[in-house]
Amino acid sequence: MNRFQAMAKIMAMLTADGRLKPGSREYKIARKLVSRKIDRLGPDAALIQVVDRQPHLLEQVEILATLEAAGGLPARLDF
Image (cartoon, one colour):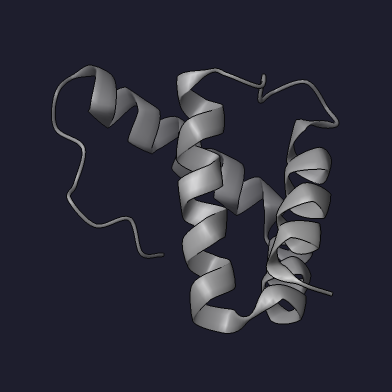
């Protein structure tokens, strides 16, 4: 699987329950986190990790969106 296929599968999975809406602040943050995971782990390992830790990733996205709204988003988003 290449990185684009992994990104598509992961984002489809993260938006399936309706918590993330395409175009929202949270969605953009999730794409950044997923992109960095894919860069760091590779497409296959990133997909496996997100499947295993989806609730945790969504919680991180919500926290980061709250921080961004308050003007305090960290410069690096490596988790």
